[in-house]
Length: 351
Image 1 (cartoon, rainbow, N blue to C red):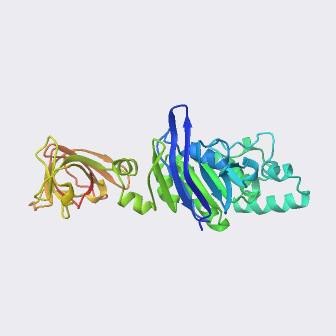
Image 2 (cartoon, rainbow, N blue to C red):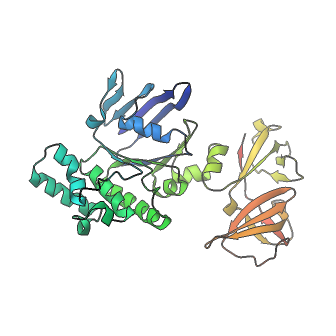
Image 3 (tube, rainbow, N blue to C red):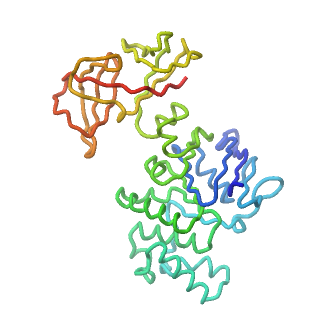
């Protein structure tokens, strides 16, 4: 039995479907990311789970307890959820200790129990040396850890994180990603993480839910989402992709529109013969080298630009009317307009 079950969840604002028929099961202790562009419905879905937004239809069940559906709509306070917002929402007039202790104080817990619980969670988030400081004396990452500790102190069934790292600089985001994942493993808490950042989703998640226009496009592990995208949107949104539109021929090749380029397909789907299709290549899957003799899967192209990105170099190559992006860690030491050979892998094909 899954720990969180969401069935047919939808939200309509006037005539606009913000979320449509969202169905998902989440296991206990799993970290699941809702990933997609702004306005895709991921935050609205999270807010329906939290109880901040009432769904138009659908059901939400947490730990075998119905919280929404069948005439039931349990208040946010009774759902036993922790929430961390993009803005941290720590109170500036309270110390770290007071911020973290506040939920227990509202519940009228004893001072002894509050002290014990606060000491426990500050160790989890490594804030022992900052417990008497005020938020303006903390870094952004430390303020975010205060918000995490305050959410965890109530021992929530599910921790909801709404783009919690988007206000941090790149290095601090990287550090906090590792800290949240480590925290989740140590506590075993179930986490639903909303983000538009594909790196966050790929590096942290057990599974990713890719959304667009209020609908789920694909659910899978980071490897599944990246290596076997369900459609063009997922391929384009997750990582980088060369997407080429063409027609699948009986010969087992795809002729690319408005070019002289034909791409061999080792296992063409006979049912798609004659259909318009899209061919997808990941830039790092294409092998680039100095001009050599070609074979069936090699194409000769002209180097028209490159970008140095530190650990990789991104080359742009013109091949028979098509520009392809290619990534490699090995510099070619060639001038622009030099001829190169590309070894193309078996492409992903979308009909």
